[in-house]
Length: 261
Image 1 (cartoon, rainbow, N blue to C red):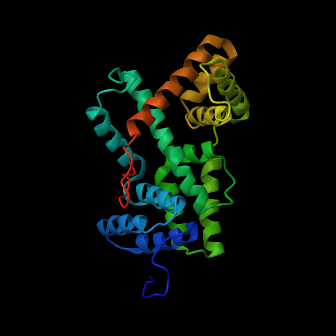
Image 2 (image 1 turned 90 degrees about the horizontal axis):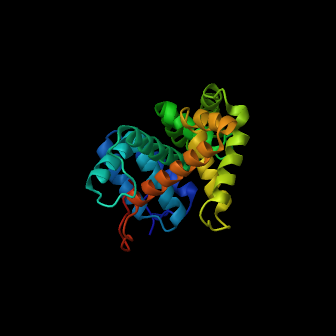
Image 3 (image 1 turned 180 degrees about the horizontal axis):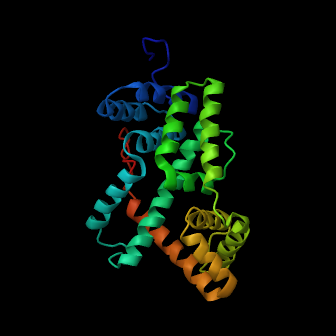
């Protein structure tokens, strides 16, 4: 089946998804954007463009990180079996920080697909999203609306790269120590699937380096107290696992769109 413009109705690739997303962002009404985005997600024949469009809807149309925070608060209130306690103010703060960082890391995939050649690591993009989400969203939307025009996309990408440089943390020359610490703690902890060890260690590394609170605290522990290093990394790992458990949904029946919260 084909549309009146001659394009295929179904979405098979990232390029198809970007073209559809540009049309959606051109709509003046946010409600219409959400409706059309939901429809286009259902028209995706492949998993990758479907997930890409769902994440674009969450980041660019539905309110980004703040909307996900609100949904998470509702989920926490409704949950009965969260494996950690989040009613202590300090624990609640850490839980929310880790959860928001995981959301930002999820959105880095949108940024990297819109800007395939971006000169920034995942933790740097996540950090920019956490500290200056509106600026990053503006440039991502602008690039999508460029509809593949190389100079236009490059200008938006360079703007995001400048944000990353401007937000470079003072401790960035010590990120290798953080990466090594996360890997070593995982190696000493409960058995981890060897095939996933480095992937999980890298996620922990990103959860620390995206934060101006957690990274300096961990570096201080690395310099002074090995026990604190283990405690901090294990705590963040446990919280990340609790966040993922909270976000788990039952299998989506065929033909239905999975909630992107």
